[in-house]
Amino acid sequence: MSLEQMLTTHVKTAINSLYGVTVDALEFQDTRKEFNGDITIVVFPLLRHIKGNPVVIGEAIGEYLVDNVSEVTDFNVIKGFLNISMTDSYHFSFYNQLLANPNFGNHIPSSDSTIVEFASPNTNKPLHLGHIRNVLLGYSVANILKAAGHTVYKTQIINDRGIHICKSMLAWEKFGAGETPESTKIKGDHLVGKYYVAFDKAYKEQIAQLEAQGVPNAKAKEQAPILLEAQEMLRKWEAGDAHTVALWEKMNSWVYDGFEVSYNSIGVDFDSYYYESNTYLLGKDVIEQGKKDGIFFSKEDGSVWCDLTEDGLDEKLVLRSDGTSVYMTQDLGTAIQRIKDQPDANGMIYTVGNEQDYHFKVLFLILKKLGYSWADNLYHLSYGMVDLPSGKMKSREGTVVDADDLIKQMTQTAKEISQDLGKLDGYTDEQKFSLYNIIGLGALKYYILKVDPKKRILFDPKASVDFQGNTGPFIQYTYARIQAILRKAESQNFSNTDGITLLDKEKNILKHLQTYPNIVLLAAQQHSPALIANYTYDLVRLYNSFFQNISIFGAESEQLTNFRVGISKVVAQTIAHGCGLLGMQVPERM
Image (cartoon, rainbow, N blue to C red; front, side, top):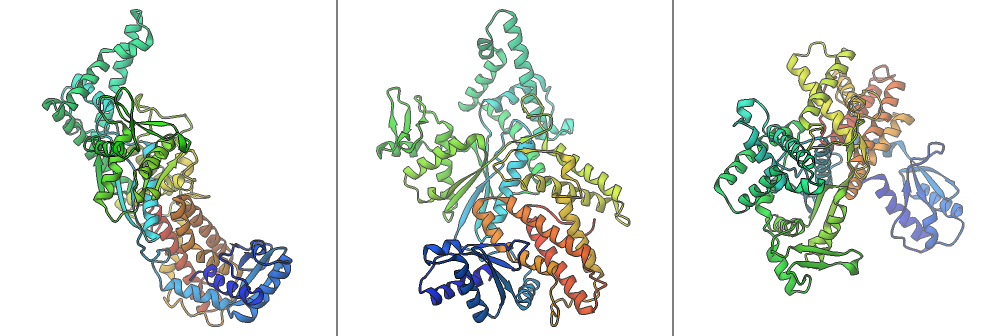
């Protein structure tokens, strides 16, 4: 039971005893540094139930708690804020609970079951920095939901059909001379991406040639021969042409193999995969039933729409006049299919960039109109773009930051900085490479996840690997430092606290640790790994202040040394848990 939970019960009892009223909720805050206290109750909201001066009300509640709750030792009231001080025995009791609970931060499993979609790449190019933010966000939110007690299913839908796929296929047929990932030693998704860029180059050259012949730009873009060929290839694919389908299957298989290598490098996995080539026909039956139920209507040309004007939106096309699907059609069908596949799921989270905000508003609203109860538990995990100092990335022009190259760069940067620090004596080359990879990936993940998902990020690889400040390596280094302390400790008896008086820096750590389970719940509710990242950074700062100012192995007694080693242990335990929620590893030594 957290301090807030324990005090809530006692404060409600106090209010009922003193004023004869019942309150539903209390507002707690951290006590400001300039005042004494371990936690603060905001009195002002109570004025809705209790008439009087907030200072007088706060003092009455404080006196009741001191008289009736053994864990409360003192209080003070500043204006309408009741600051409460707890006994050392209360903090020691919590500390010993932490020692005995290696899973601190995990909540009891609930009946909530959630599908989390992330990644969802196109099969015409490799993963890039923008995909990395998507993947890291989705994977971390899935981890956080699990810690909060949810059953979680991680999934993605792979965009493996359409004109953009045919562009890569056509360019490979024209310019590839039969080369394969095996013959070139190029990762499959990179090889296919190479031909996506090659198509764009040839397309622009043909547009320029047509313009030189006097064709207007708009018509040149439509009439470029290579684009017309790609459109014809798409028609053949949709008609089931054997040669086209075989080429599509071959090149997609190269990409899937390449993606899997990238996902393994990043350290993420999935429970299921959906493919647009299988799902693009889903939803048509739903549309037909929705027409009968009056949710959709047909226009004169035969196209089918959903009128959302009364909901503040517009009319939305859900089926073309020729009966073919649009993205909304297949997204409706895919959502329904996923719940059929995971019938215990009562909600879904879509990790997709903020350029699709409107699309998901419409999707969720239509699913509600169709009467699906789980549609009330749909969430668009909308995130901002990732920018570079040099500007935006463009896949067609080959100016993206490739995910695999970025991971290698992060590992190399971590290697250079670690070598400068010179603390890896005795490590084998294999151990060093593993450590560089842990540091580099940790730097990348933390730098991206510490930012609120809705904000854009300006990504600076070198700044992310700084061993000082709000960075992943700074957190990892503190964890490794604590592991060195634990190795040095001569005793594992950390629980004897009899006669010890808590110092403020020790108490501050324990107070911060007490809030961790609530932070996990809040991060799950807000779908925000940033809350976990910044909580962990604050914990590390508190610990480093303790470490730099209070002697552990030079303490007055062995008992006190053991207690301070124990505090270090539970801090490391919580750092590891928080980093795990972010998908980060923590090294035993740095």
